[in-house]
Image 1 (cartoon, rainbow, N blue to C red):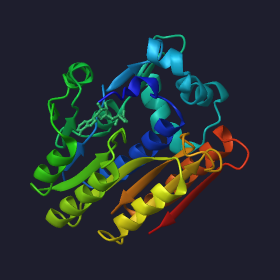
Image 2 (cartoon, rainbow, N blue to C red; image 1 turned 90 degrees about the vertical axis):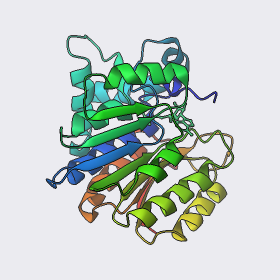
Image 3 (cartoon, rainbow, N blue to C red; image 1 turned 120 degrees about the horizontal axis):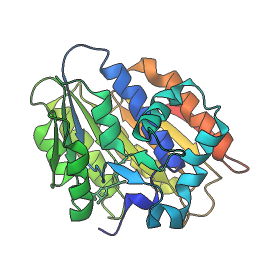
Image 4 (spheres, rainbow, N blue to C red; image 1 turned 180 degrees about the vertical axis):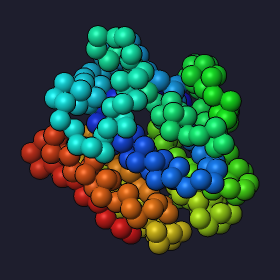
Length: 274
Ligand code: SAM
């Protein structure tokens, strides 16, 4: 449990994950019936980009910093940029960046439910403070995979965000097992899984394993550079299961824009179905 998201908050991968997350939540909340959201790996909820970790990595400066400075991100980024702006009201620059918990509670209605799981004590303490004002939100210091499995299908519609640190060798297998278990209890559940892109073999193996449990996956692959050096995070992917087809153009625009704007020679954004 060494991973700290504060090093990575607001980087290119967060931009892809969070812009797609908000597009998905917009589509899912267009339906009046209540939505139960489970965030298996929630993190701290919001991040101070002036802190030591963000300053050391400089990842936010190369991600959200560039998007804000250049000011020409296409429409599907508008909900994310609005959330960043509202979090930073009164600040000259944008020192704070929202994590998935804050983005989710802002997008939900009072009739919805939100469960956020986080295992680290320090990040969990901050997460509880972030969720404090939202009566429909609950922070749990509990394993996210087990919580998703236990809570899916308790009535109403379910959306599960799975965003592990991939520090454990079984994280890919746990993602697949969670998709299998959640869809078994609730075949209409929607899931979104974030993964890093390091080498093709690992990602291919994950998609092949996923194909054994669903035939309804939309894959948004953001390669910042060709996947030649497996020791580097060469990109990121969002894998959506059961997502409404209407969001596909936004997913595609988000992914191709980030590849073109933040990528190196050989960068590519690709959205495909498995
Ligand atoms: N989803 C967050 C966001 O978008 O702002 C970022 C989450 S970060 C990538 C992953 C988090 O999962 C870390 O804070 C880590 O401590 C936590 N974590 C690791 N294993 C976990 C588990 N089995 N259950 C719940 N949380 C876990």
